[in-house]
Image (cartoon, rainbow, N blue to C red; front, side):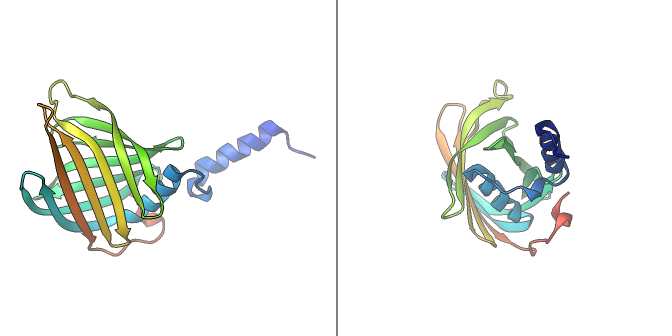
Length: 183
């Protein structure tokens, strides 16, 4: 007995729900997100603002949503000061940044360089911007190698003045293997 097209589609949908990592990535955004999943773990490094402010910083990466989202906590002191959630929207790689400026910029990958494992995100919109107009305007993420990562935030002040924050991180815990890397 030959299955109908509808039955075959149903099987594919059910397989994608049960085994989301079984599918190969077809677009640059999907492949970059797969690469970004390797960031899971604890990181330490420094931040440097274009105005001269600098200091130590820690970061934590973990998966949530059955591996469909990567959460990045940037930690100054004892608590996360910023959290970013990276995820796919169809073939598009997106991020929502929960900023220390108390707003939530939403960005979309506009340039993926697979050769050097980097991605540039550009602003789509900002929630809570009326109360807190200064916001992240762009982000460049560069996975230098399995233990080195650079983030460069473009920040737009309430007056429109631009600032850059560069974060350089080094992995401090080995990359976990398998499904236990989720949260």
